[in-house]
Every structure is written in structure tokens, then in C-alpha cells.
Image (cartoon, rainbow, N blue to C red; front, top):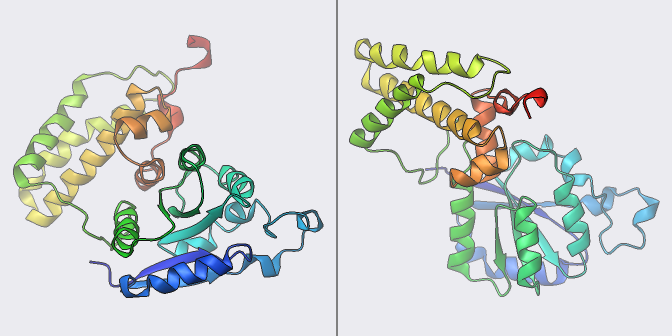
Length: 266
């Protein structure tokens, strides 16, 4: 289990009064959760932001993608005053793996909450905060994001389930891809049988890791194939958050373009 969770918090002056009070009350529930406040307003140098309740560029998250990697999750406070800025900031984040963002919502209606979730928020909590819910949502969100060497209650497949999954993965060899753009995906499938048949000469741990790796790769590629390379649809069909799905794609260097039909075939 992860020893410490590093949580970034966007410190916006418009929210500080209620946010500081709310997080102060959550300290008893914040064991192993370390807060790091991002004071981006201090560094703002954009004259066009003077009339905005948020003195931060809407491109701030997109520009800080690399520096945010040292954190496990980010708390983003949102109120009616900052709802418009938050929408623009989330929309500006480039497609691909990104630190999971949890909203701390103050007086938002359901339509606004749904809109922010569709723009990429991983989860949210509402004021007044419940200590148990607050902690559970942070732990649950972090556990869903693949991170080398770390896990947080990440469930493992039972041995029997793993064997069935491996067999189904190998059976995918018999089903051809619809796309003709590349045969790279087919090459992935052709290596599945070799990996599993060679497992008998290796340790249990190494063999299991190979089978799990092959299953994850086959599952993602199959989902992309079934949805013509549409990542949003593939992640929803897999009951997996879009950013976690992207993380698996990057882990196995899977290109969604390989599963999209050629323009001349449409």
C-alpha cells in the first residue's frame, strides 16, 4: 500500500475563505494524504485576467502537465464564480494521461457537475465535506491510476480468472482487424501464444506478469478495434476512466490511429 499520497490543491483567493476551513476540518481524515498548495495566482502576469475572479491563465493546467506529475491527485475547488474558468481550464488540458483531478464543489447544480465530469474530472466532493467520503474518494481515485511500483487496494485477478482471461486473449488471434491502416495490432496478438507457452520455463511471478501484461494489451487493443479507434467510447465500454485508459495505451505504446478506418473507406 502506498505510504503517502501527495495531493496538489489549487489555491485561488476567491475560494480560500471556505476551502481552508473545509480542509482544516478534514485533517483527522487526511492520514497519509499530504497537501501541497499551488499558488498560481501569485505568478499570473496576464493583464486580461484583471476582471476575472481567477487570476490564473486558463492554460495553467495544460502548461503545468509535466510539473504536476510529482503529485498523485489534484484538488480543484469550484464555485459559481469560477465555474466558467474551470470549464475552460479543463477543456485546455491536452488529450492523454494526466494527473486525476477531484473537484471540491461549492453550491453547484447537477448540470454543472455533470459538465465538469465530462470535461475530464475524475471525481468530486461537495460542501459540507464528509470526512469518510472525502478520504474514500481520494483513495479510490488514486488507486485507479496506474503508477509504476505503487498500488492502493488495486484488486488482483484470482488464478482461475487469470487463466480464463489468458485463454480468451489467445483466441483473439483468430479474429482479424477491420482496419487496414497497419498490421501492428495483429503482431501484438501473434506474440500472445508464444508468451504463454514459454511461461513454463520461468518463475510463477514472471509468468503471471507476462499473462497480465498480455491481457491488458489485448483488452485495450480489442476495445479500440470494436469502437474504430474512438478512445472515449472504448474507455466507457471498458468501465474505465478515460485518463486511466490513456495510461494503459501509453504503457503499451498503443496508437488509436491504427484502429481507425481509412478516410477512403468511409
